[in-house]
Image 1 (cartoon, rainbow, N blue to C red):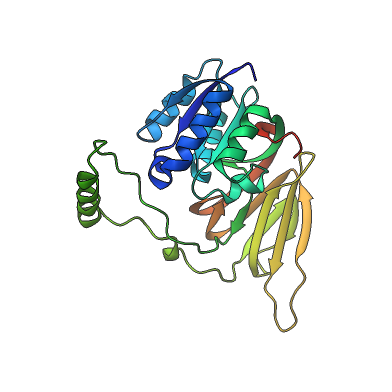
Image 2: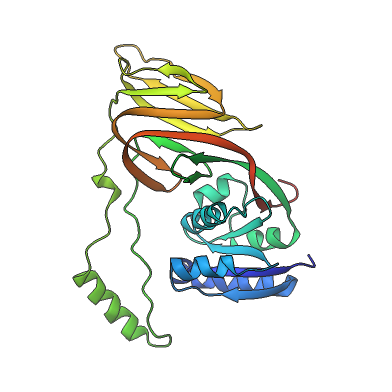
Amino acid sequence: MSEQLLVIIDPAARQADGESVRIAKDVLSAGAATKVCLPDGPEEFARALARRGSRRPVVVGDDRALIRAVSLLHRQRELAGCALSVVPVGDAALAESLGVPAGAVAAARAVLDGAERRLDLLVDDSDGVVLGALGIPPAPVRAAAGEPVSVAPGRPWLRTRYRSLVRTLAPRPARLATVPAPGPSRLRVEVDGETVVDLDQPVEAVSVAPGTGGMASVEVRPLSVGAEANPLLVSGQTVTVAGADFRYRADAVVSGPVRRRTWRVAEGAWGLVLPSSA
């Protein structure tokens, strides 16, 4: 591609797998004019993305880095005119589910030779975004990793000693296991203004995901008594969930508790560069 790239390398990626980061940089630099940015944290990440100019942004990092980039572009109202690329390093189940190749070499080549695909997005009433899917209640997963630690390069003994000190003095990151275990909930679920399930019918789980053509796919699993109850499958452009305080997982992030949340589908709201054959 003749265009220029802004390669933003998330600090967590540099810590998790420096070799994959180096490979990605080499492949991208060999195929395009690149400017590499090494932000130390979320604020510098946001500043680099905002100052990209005409360069196409490439995020090297995990799913959280991808979500952060899309969220920032959405808040800046710049998603429509920006084709985003990602080279997954770290936990990248979401990126891979969207069609991004696994592996630094394959993903970097897709950045250079791929094509933009417009994807639907869920946007909630607090201006949050969902790229893949959301679930109520949030399924428990492994504990989230701590924030990356920045120390002087070339001093591994200092890095090790500093990390040990941080682990000793700093509060431990919240473990997602502290989120209440999934169980029956009493929720009102409405799709395009029509009630799918009301508060008098306990439910085991609700899931919502962007579908195709500007529609969201909604699955409601009623609480089964005896024989297993069939899930309720509906689709629509707007989904509202209300009830007692509930938490939900949107992509890789647990939010809440809230008593009411509405999501609407933004059709073709963001562009992701994927392999041309995808």
